[in-house]
Image (cartoon, rainbow, N blue to C red):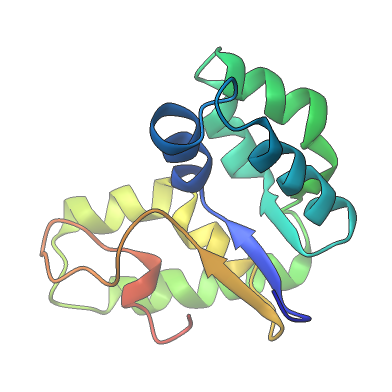
Length: 144
């Protein structure tokens, strides 16, 4: 990691906890996330925190107990402005159907992109952009 900051999507946490870096198998992975968050190099957003809390599992407990200070508020005016711009762009895209647009608007993905600043990188579990009419992802946008 250089001087960049990384904003993590819910899938990063969920996939790591349930597949690759289970808490009992790779505790140092989780410790390093906390250390990087403390240094201001890794963060996420409050809407991802809300998604993680729905799990009511070890990941939800870890997020609440160890990573809670690293969840940025999406109530900041610059985040809301960027989110509004992104939602306008999504709504104008004919390649996405109405259900995909509604799903994107209700998920944390748009807010993640809205939370990006010039020195930040979005890191999510989804590979690349979507070519589907049924799914809009932040990687599809010219804003990311």
